[in-house]
Image 1 (tube, one colour):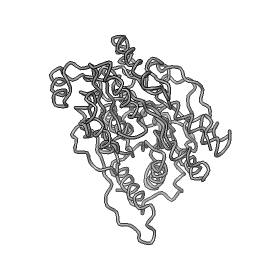
Image 2 (cartoon, rainbow, N blue to C red):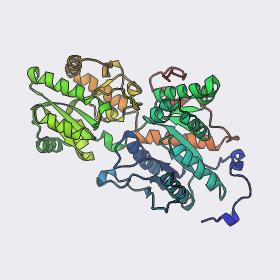
Image 3 (spheres, helix red, strand yellow):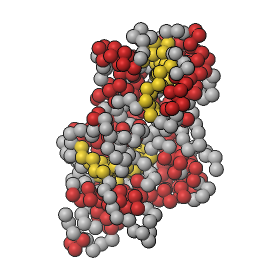
Length: 456
């Protein structure tokens, strides 16, 4: 390892004016993110992208996490990806605050130096952006500064930015993200919410500056997400899960939490019990509502709750379902900024119905797959019946749409952005978004970015 004794005598920011055009496709990324067993779309996305990066670059990829190790072998990062778990670091009894952050930063710094990392990639603003910036500056004392890519993802935007405009803590985060080489958002909707916060903090000038730099990078699914289980696997799954072999399964899969609108699905199942005896409803996932849902299922013969399902069983559930249902709702601190769970159903040609909120429309092909917020359970049931009446056509549309969202494409987007960022002369500001971006050509047309109003 290079030592501080031989470090540059210049300020860490001195690197900003050097081009790095030697960087091409054999880039070594290190991702700072959550990791299974933490269950979220972003934890899975980080895992999938790293695996795809290893294949595309032919170089070993790395991930730093503080979420422990998963007992599910299918959560393993796989060949070509090294996961670094944060080590125990002695705390400072006089300054106890921020001990975990320092420990995460120390592991990221060590892994960057030992593995000659080219790019630091983050999946949350808070606190990952600040950590990545600090580590990149520290690395720059000893060698070239890594390219830093900050992704704005998930409810992080609400809880870290939009809900903290009044108390001022959101303002610091804008400074963190503006120090990135590349600034990504997981959806167009996420960008709008983030720009709204920027305008509330710094007016139109700050929002316009950020809007010039925000680039879109949609999530991508790994090849296994498109793999259909065999009929024997599906029969065995139904039998083991207590489901009838001939039933029409309507299911949802995700966190068992209030924001997922699972009470709506319970009401739909209750209505269907009287008029559609062939329907069986399945709620699968992990979360704080697991016990309550299990108790309700004991009183509803057409409802099954599956908790802590493996990756294999999750895929079987999707494949054996006729419709995936996602009645997600807005609650304080949460709104869907995409919907990877819906995309996983569509990858298997299973049509979905999802609440038309936040970034969910960007995870579905068109309005036939969306349901307006506050729609009554009876109307949800009618929409399910409409999907079933047109199942073959909706299935084909869903599969074709999901085919665009591969982890290889998402990872290639990261490689392309990193190379563009490395090849520019001035690294003192983020990479500017290209108004003619081939990546956007195959997605549905999106409105020009603007600062969507937020409630203060």
